[in-house]
Amino acid sequence: MSNTPQNNADQNNPSPGASIEPSPGRPRVVIACRVMKNEIDRLLPDDGSIEVHYLDQNLHRSPERIRPLIEEKIAETAGYAAHIVLGYGLCSNGVVGIRAASQMLCVPRVHDCVALILGSRRAYHKAFSERAGTYYLTPGWVAEQKDPLGTLENEYVPKMGREDAEWGLREELKHYTHIVLISGREMKNREFLRERAKANADFLKKEYEEVEGSDRFFRKLLFGPYDPEDFVCVAPGDTIPQKPFLQS
Image 1: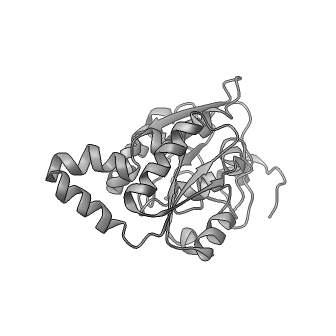
Image 2: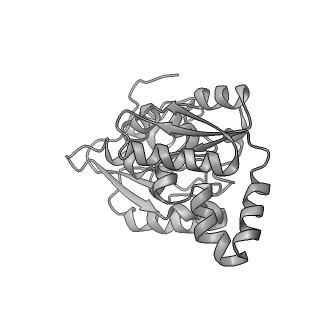
Image 3: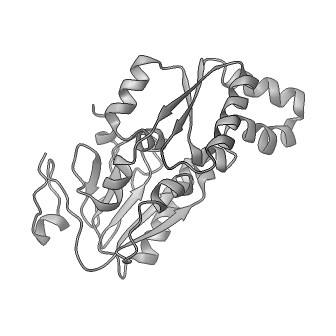
């Protein structure tokens, strides 16, 4: 991959295999899922060069809503953004078809936020190949009460009653063998998050583990370069395709 800065024409019309560098001057706009707020906010510079807009984490349950809401935010920032980066993965095809009329648009070349928090696509594929039956919990998921126990109490029990809700949750996750918390050196409320993750494992009768995350992908998301190994970038007016996310 190339990390060499390119001229403006190349940045506006990225070619396959080209590494995209951040543009100077106007702010870079990041539109991200709120589940990654802690990881992103910790890295933000104070100079106003990066502007972040967070969208509701609950969109993962209705991915068809991701595209119109992101494009609405793109339209709001189009008048001043240098270029736009999405803090999302493929997310059940939720990002496919998104376009920015005036800016280059980049999105991490991952399926979901787990790869971002682990630090790389390689780390994600390695973890998945070694043990596919792992349910990952991130600090953001637990804080937003989108862990299995949070989903049980806030969504399932009100809809179907406790007995059916508990049966349904266990049935939904019966093929998983482990609950793994992705932690980090800068993780806030570490003991609460750890105890909550262990409570999920105990309730579901799964093995509990903790692995160290990395801020590598988040640094690239904020500061670049946006190389084709880790990002899908499209020129102004073009739409985000599905195919690059499915390639190894």
